[in-house]
Amino acid sequence: MGIRRKELQPIEDPWVGADYIVRKYSVSETTGLRWIRKLAAKYLTYTDERFTKRGKRLLRRIPLSILEEHINEFLN
Image (cartoon, rainbow, N blue to C red):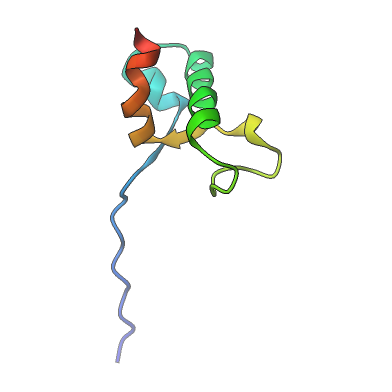
C-alpha cells in the first residue's frame, strides 16, 4: 500500500510584488512599492497572514485582485 499524494489546490488569488508591477505597467520599483503600500493601507488588515512582525512598512506584496480593481486610480 502506497501513500496517496494530496491533490494540490489551485491558487485562487495570487499575491504579486513590485517586480510584477514594474514589468506589467512600466513604472519604477519605488512607484510599485508605493502603490502596494497605499492599497495595503486601504484594503488589507493586520490580521492578514502576509504582514510581518516588523509592521506594515515591510509589506511588499498585494493580492492581484485588489491591484486589478484599483489600478486605474494610479494610472490616471
